[in-house]
Image (tube, rainbow, N blue to C red; front, side, top):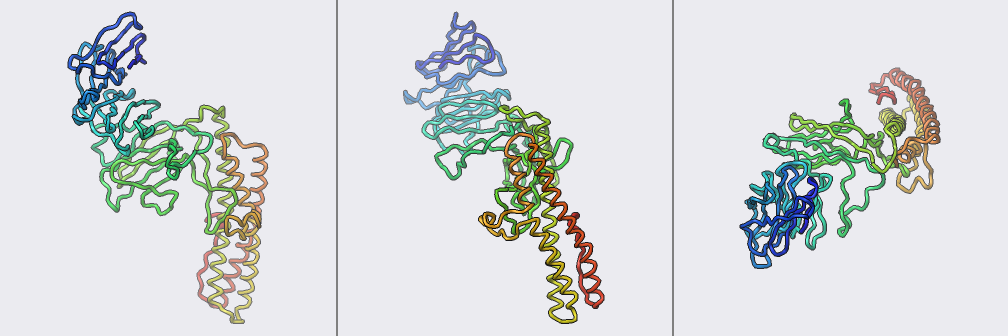
Length: 480
């Protein structure tokens, strides 16, 4: 086992299979035998990790199981091997250690892989705790730390990875004493491309790193009535999204358990407003992705809040500028809001039709109400024309758009989806299409407002003249 110090030039540590440790500080010109005096003869030096914070410090894991000795051996030095300390308190006496690694971000944070699983120490090896989590009971032959990720190489059970060690860097007695706490999220990349395979249905495939910002938090006391809420905010405090364990909206629900939790925000703003029975062609309701920059997150549990700042980074493989990211975002927000305006109009039309249905039911077929029924029928017919100009009402299933085509709202929603596929500013053609469809939708909404202004007041007047008690609310599609 040979380890070159990543911190000090010409410093190399070597451990042999027959129980010896040597170190050189001049690139191999001179070597010193630094074998721990208490180490058993022929103790196999399995791993060496240089201390990131102490010059002359190192950690060594050794095994003697081949000689029938399952004892865990972890040695620590802070003076280039002149003195050694055995640091294995907490690890069972029959669980030999194959590898030990020091966290480069937090002093004293160590990880150990044994014949049966994982262990962790927060006090530089003075004590160890089980760190198995969802890892199967399996020999850990090696560990690697990179980009705040911990990768474990097992014997027979594949590679495993903890994809965010930053909560461990932030743990302290003060944090643990709180009822709830939101850890500062690690910087997250806005990645171009797809999310890969879903390992939940493909048991032989690995699982990709979550595609979004990972929020780690804990809740020590959780009653059935306790509301837990996570809010994502722009740097100026403007709310982007809100998620709660009490929300009935599937897209805003938060699954919370007592203890540690993780929530992944997909970096997206809300999509456009929808309506019951809406069927679109090739236009998933995905809001714009947040531009790279600084943001905030707030955890609120039973009225107690903690807040952290985090950063979204751009994909380092692309050349998109901050101005181009913002241009794309502004374009998509305009498109999203106009689709929502169109759907507000659809909702207004359907509410008016529902209201008129109540009136028709009350009036019945009595001839004295023919003038009211005729006025409502004409109003309903005119509303249906506008509704069908905005939305293809014949589409009731996913295959229907192939037969009946799509209308203004679906065309604009598709533009939003298509222009949000990559990390690039809107094309000239896309802006021309946006303006054209926006003008057509605005024209339909103006026609709707004119119809409402003319007919609702007139029909209410006719009802009042007949002495019928009826509550009917005048609706402005722009204000719903």
